Length: 168
Image 1 (cartoon, one colour):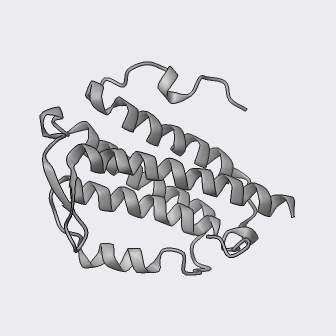
Image 2 (cartoon, rainbow, N blue to C red):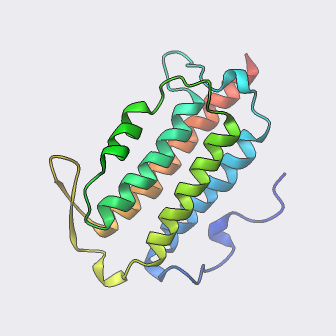
């Protein structure tokens, strides 16, 4: 049960520059809601694909992976072999991964991403950043915004998937 307003209605977060407040708000809101959603989610449904759509486990892995990759791109770095391995494994059934472990990994990646966000100089937001192997054009601000937008998108998909799986 919600006892406080959404994150964006709780005021400024002093560790983030004013222009990056919406990014922090969106990510923190998704994190809170994901933690609540997954708290009582049945373990046996974690890897279930509904109508060919991604499993809840995939969404948890993917959000964490996107946070990690976007942090790397925002710092103008290349992805490591470990990051490519993680990307390849997103969504592959792994009975060793529990809901608690996936949520813990997600929380850790969000924490790391928010650290990068807090250290981002607002003057760099329009600086060019290449994304992916093709080095598609973006900016520091574009990458940081994409992380928030992508997190919200996958949280929405996770929410619907979990609710439908539980109701079956």
